[in-house]
Figure 1 (cartoon, rainbow, N blue to C red):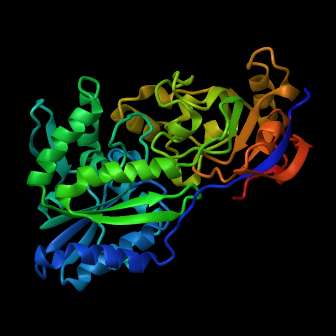
Figure 2 (cartoon, rainbow, N blue to C red; figure 1 turned 180 degrees about the horizontal axis):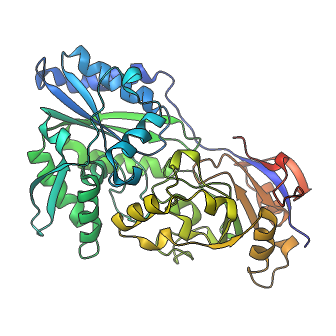
Length: 423
């Protein structure tokens, strides 16, 4: 088969960033005057999630130090629903993999899947909350604010979701995702959060917003009573900075890797245009991608292949990396079983692409609108086929880094090393 020729592109984003993270966190937390609420010797549970947030270990350590300076006794609570196989050991391993060890942070990690049944929401939904956090004198919520991969609204993924899903642990996450089948995400979110804010000793939060280069662009410390309104503002900013595939139509999207450290859905559905449906874009969604082909999983996902089922094609290497038990637990807890289904599997990159390119319609493979990305988090540089050449040349935000070259493979059918992404 004659494959498309690909050229490399750099995408320029509006990208403010914070150079002094420790100083910014100190300034933000100082504004809240938390010493007026927290007495020396009191315990503070600080949330740590499973996403691959830039500078997360440094951010959490700075938060820990602030509370220690107030004389409090902070500790870390892994807050990630059913990730890590839905086990305390698995969740601890995830945050330690991001550098959040007890030695680095200077405080204990208390990982447990045990929850406290706080009460029921007005809809009759049982509200679960991490037992260690519930028993603390105070809870500090830390999380990145960004578009959610399934739900749309003024509030999507951020501090409120961390309290709902993250601190709900596996039991709470499963219940909330079931409830969302009967009620809207927005209704459940506001209903449950009202009870949590009232009854679970939430002292404050820290919202993190990243730019398109995955850099820390904004940090904002927030009083609990302001969570809802401030998160709406932070989400609007996050959407403005959110990285995108800069084309409306794509015949084939080749992705090197997916993983929970990349996105809750493995591949961010906001990026691939499949937030509503698994295998096609809704009318209002872009890009409209006909086929997705997947090469592998990230090491940090620990075999969790949620998002596997969004791709139409995958390699045997990707399949061999899957831990089906971990994947099944997470997909079912999230109420989205189809993301754990298997794509059509091929032994090599070459055979996968040969079959994927003959499934896109009447367009001949050399003329296909093909885009190749490392993952849905790193979109500053990517490869695209010559079908996009004029479009790229006309876009001032796109810079051509390398002229078109043939797509080549080694004797094992693997894409040649010179095409690997290193951004």
